Amino acid sequence: MVEEGISEVEKGLNCGEEIADYGQMREQKEQEMSEIRYYKGKYEVKVLMRNRRNWTVETLEEFQDYVHGERCMHEVKSGTQLNVAPNLLFKKKGLPPPLKEHIYELKMEKRLKHLIAEEEKKKE
Image 1: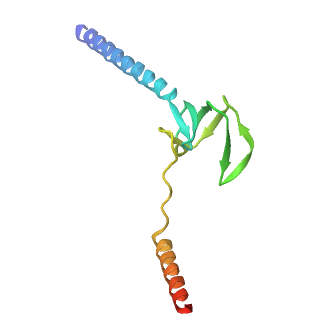
Image 2: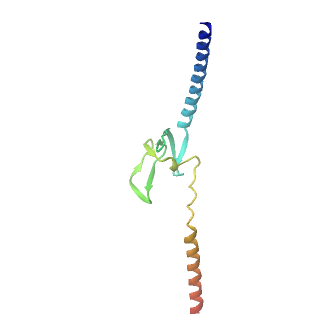
Image 3: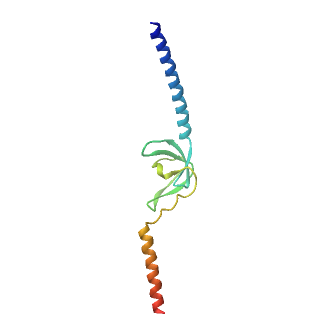
């Protein structure tokens, strides 16, 4: 019986440790949720909730949003909540790096410039 009592106490201590760890995890999660990110590297937003596919953010400034290079019909106002893909949120303000062109396209462009230069030389 005494051994059973000791194991119950030990179990209680282990549970307390787990609860403390859970509390730390929760505090860390709350800090992460209140962090500031930059939507598309330009506009300041506050992270409210994280999910695997989308993060819910609150805008901290007004801006005009663009989707696929086209202007949206409405202006996004400060305090609006948006569901955003995490790859559109950056830790630092600034534009994302430009996409590199495909190597084949670069080679063909170089060849075309070379052919044009040759044709101009022949005309002269």
